[in-house]
Image 1 (cartoon, rainbow, N blue to C red):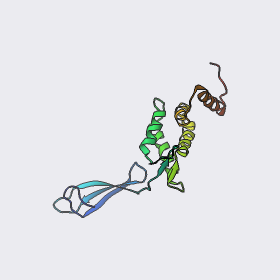
Image 2: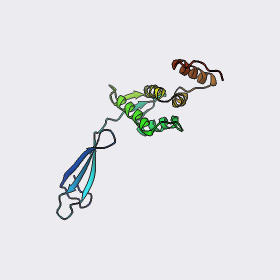
Image 3: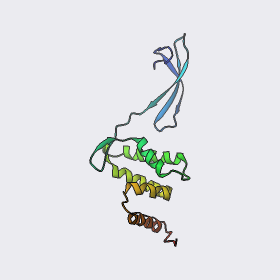
Length: 160
């Protein structure tokens, strides 16, 4: 590993540990150049295959974890959901996608994964995400989804 200070080609690993990001290893290194001897950190990660998302209209684009995270964060906005839980949800979905037999995945499959996970995590976040994902075009479709949610939880109908 090349030293970032002196560009020396020799270094030794003095500490190694897993980084918080899944699949990353953090290594503390020390330059073996006697004139330098500085320490620096490197990160090693497994190179993942690129996933391609097939959109509803047939377009294809690279999987973008940050785009998925942004959509889920928007649905969870102002809800009592810890950020760690949201990150775990995204990690789980990404792991499921990487386990797919193909590197091309339809966007509807990702949407279904998200709504299933959000439904068990937070009903309000679920209905927010579902209203965009399922493209509710009127109040009746929104009402139908709410009624399914209420019946599915054994809550039943409430008088308003």
